[in-house]
Image 1 (cartoon, one colour):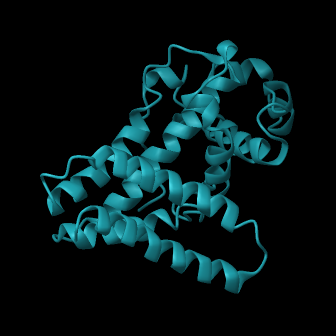
Image 2 (cartoon, one colour):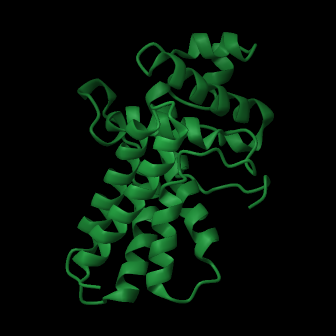
Length: 222
C-alpha cells in the first residue's frame, strides 16, 4: 500500500471530500484523536476548529454535523480494512488460505498502517468500536439520510463472503457467519488491548485467532 491511496466513500457522507485538501485531511485526522480522547458527546466542531487553528465555518464546509463526520469515519475504516485484506490476499488462489489470512488481518486492524500518514487506524479502530452504534443504530435526533452508511461495511462483508463461497458455495449462512466474525474480532480486540501486559496481549491474540478459525471452519464443516 502507498500513501497516495484514496478510497471511494459514498458522497452522502460528506459535503466536500476531505481527502482532496490538506485542511480536509487535518479535520479527519484530528477528529479521530479528539473522539478517542474526549468521546463523541464531548466532541464539537468548535473545539476541532480551535485545535487545527481554523474556523468552525471551514469545518462545516466539509461535514454537515458531527454525526455525518462520524458516519464518514466509520465508512472509511471499513473501506480501508477491506482494502487491507484484499492487499494481503491478492496473490493467493486457495480460498481457505485466503480466509485464514483475512482472519489474521482482522486481528491487526487495531494497529496503525504507516502507509497512510494522516489517519491512525489503530485509534480509529477504538472510535469505531466505541461509537459505531450511533451510525448503525442512531438516536432519533441523529437519524439521517446518509444512504451510503453501510457501503464500507458491506464491501468488507462481501470480501469475506467471497472467500467462504469459494470454500463451500452451498453454505446457507454466509452473511450471518461474516457478521459474527467481524463482531467478535473487533469487540474482543478492543477489550483485549486495554491491558498493558504485552505477553498477555500476544497470547490472547493468538488464542483469539485460533478460536475464530475454529468457529469459521467448524461452521463450514471443514
